[in-house]
Amino acid sequence: MDVDFQIDSKGPMNRMESLKVIKDTNLGTHLSDLKAYLTHFESVVAEQLQKAESKTDRAYETTFRLHTLISSELAKTTAACNLYATNLQTVPKELLTKFLGTAAGFYNRMRDYPMTRAVRDNYTALTLLAASYTALKTYSLMVHREDVSLLAYEALEKICPMIIELSDLLPQVVARETALREGLVYDEAVIDRVTNAVRRCWHQ
Image 1 (cartoon, rainbow, N blue to C red):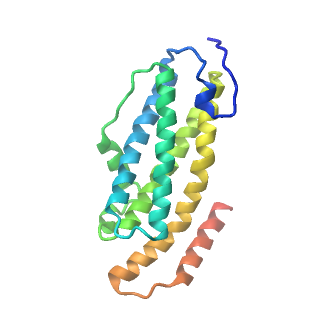
Image 2 (tube, rainbow, N blue to C red; image 1 turned 180 degrees about the vertical axis):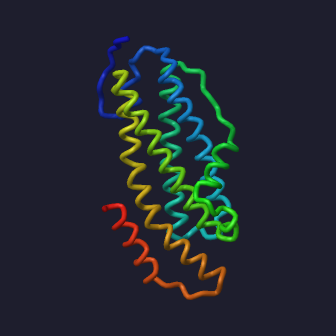
Image 3 (cartoon, one colour; image 1 turned 90 degrees about the vertical axis):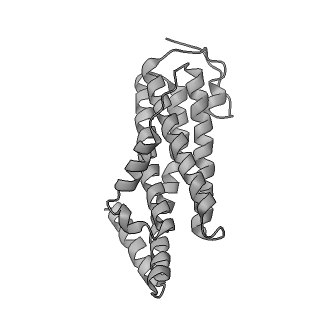
């Protein structure tokens, strides 16, 4: 179905304001599943902020910005869901929790390292979110929905740099909590070595 919409400079949701409400079951499913994922991701990160032992370090500041990012994308996705008149889907929160708890394969060993676990889980969840937006952008272009494609692209512009930032942050957090919990000396050289090694691997 062809529809007319006005172009402005205020973002994809504003660009879609003059669109007629459209019933698109397949696109609606993509959007509502994304909304469910963002909703649960936002609640997990909000809980991390609330329970953080330190609210002044780099890890907390990064987590705070991540929460702001997720909240913003949740609002935009909710608007898109409403626009496409879809019946919002929900998935059990336990599915996300289970995925985050098992994806790295050593969840039980990280119970005494709360910030390590938080950064690792956020890294994992954000990577999956990037994949979801990549799929959404591809699908929306295939069905000629440039507005939703732009929504996905603008989300990826923010998510991908955050994934890189969390990748760089993880060695620092692991080293700091390991030193604290096991009585070892915090070694910046270890962090630099790991960070550089991971960057080389990404660029091979």
